[in-house]
Length: 95
Picture 1 (cartoon, helix red, strand yellow):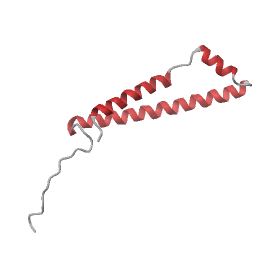
Picture 2 (cartoon, one colour; picture 1 turned 45 degrees about the horizontal axis):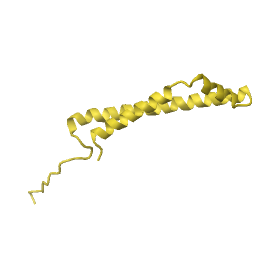
Picture 3 (tube, helix red, strand yellow; picture 1 turned 180 degrees about the vertical axis):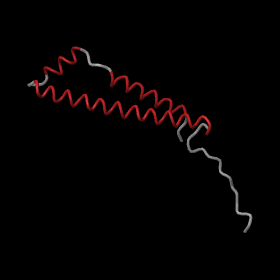
Picture 4 (cartoon, helix red, strand yellow; picture 1 turned 60 degrees about the vertical axis):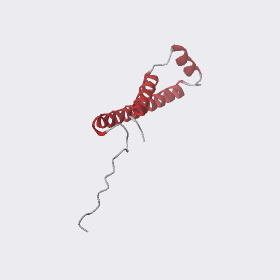
């Protein structure tokens, strides 16, 4: 069972991951990255690859966050724990 507190903690972790992903590299990190490649064409190819991977990761994290926030809003009326349902032991009284 997952509680609201666990979902909130997961959402907070997603927020931190988003912030880390969207953070721009420092000048020194860019310089090291640039100097580690032998040619400019390989640098361009890798930088484009990194940018597309970053965009995909951000999109995935934002979608996950939206889904969790939707679930959390539903829980406001449903109860504190996912999967916590009261069972009614109603038997067929007609036969």
